[in-house]
Length: 461
Image (cartoon, rainbow, N blue to C red; front, side):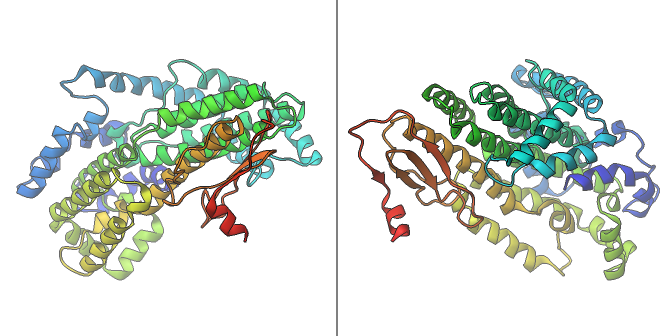
């Protein structure tokens, strides 16, 4: 997804003449895109149902400009607007630390040593890790200084819609993994408590990304937090870890869970991006939003001119279908992920029934309503992993297990096994084989009895 949106801005000048309005001037500057955040097209539509939907979004402060805090009757949202220049400055500094021409090679080097799961390294790999951390020490320290600043923020510029630059996420990934490898080096040196410092920064950046009203940023936050939990595992299971270290890890996870973002926030931001996208389409930039291969396929199947006419004729109904669908998605976030399946299935059924008809919502289907269930699943997995590790740390510290311990991804109970030596929390993601959260018990109660969930006993029989 990210590569498509970087590709969009490069394609706009070349393709705009092929879309709905052939006399549309090429977009050359971000300000040319930002003008569509005022939603001139949908604001002037004569479709009453679409106008009513827009009125609801305005009342909910959910349009692109409102999400940025402009304009608004509430002073509380103004800092969002003021944060955009600071974010641009932060992104610029990240570009200096990790220049675009460095990122491919940097990510390749880190990919080769980052473990697929867990946080264990062979002696030979640790030698490579030490070499990499020394080689990129200056970059890591610059990243630490930037990401640990009190005012470090990465808010999404909703006025740019799909064309907003998300390449900074690549820089964040590199800095994040450098922090993780630095922690690995500290662990190899026998100092798990010192490794909590880079872990804390990794958690902070993951939280900042996940808190944004953007499905792209929310997904990036989940991926980065997954890597962070690998580092946490390495610290928790280190032979020199102490009860104090475990308590610090537990506190950090509890803080993450206390500040956990509502899933609906990501979809609200995604919907604002969709509003902006429809304005681009109304402005004549339909084909600018697709790749070369997709355009070639559309040309062969229906013809470019016919496609543009079809989309232009049905644009109000297309956008209405999209907004009504997104309202369902936002509303269903009141329920856990494992209870949302019927909604996602109904959306797909609705699209299947409309394909091939004059009322087919082409933009919604081909561009905007993509991977909805996968996005919801990733957010639920992110939460499940955090809850599992927090639970494992609490039980390892002697807390009484809460009942029931429901997995927010599956709706089933976690498998819980507490022995005299360790705590195991399993069934985090049975379908994808997510590794269990295993924490050694460092302060043993001589009178402690073995605790095992019924589900775990059934699995072992």
